[in-house]
Image (cartoon, rainbow, N blue to C red; front, side, top):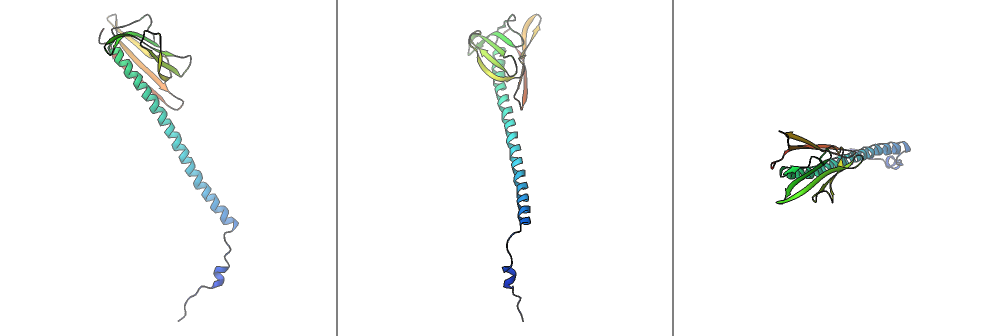
Length: 172
């Protein structure tokens, strides 16, 4: 019985990869790396959009919560000063009567939403990504202003959020 043997010359003649085989291998690897890189860039872009939207929505919710609370506690709104971009009211903050002014400022988007709790002397920015300065709408019933609608249109280059709330004044 004879055994099958491998001839030493068969293994000894192999010289490595040809240039064609090397080029095909490099092209396939380049396609795989390009596809992986494109997926990673797309995922990073999507993450940035989601983060922008989350930040804008968070700023808007904080501002809206503050405004709603102050408007509900308001005793009066100064209609001579109040406009679509300004709300001037007498309200209570922590049980203390306070003159509060909310306003949208800026000459072009993004506008800033600011608050003053000293009657309009010192303002601080609450949100800085307003798309429109038209924030307030006033509703009167029986000749008495008793409802304010807040419409915050917030956004960045990659995302936009609109938050709206109708607030009835309790103390009017």
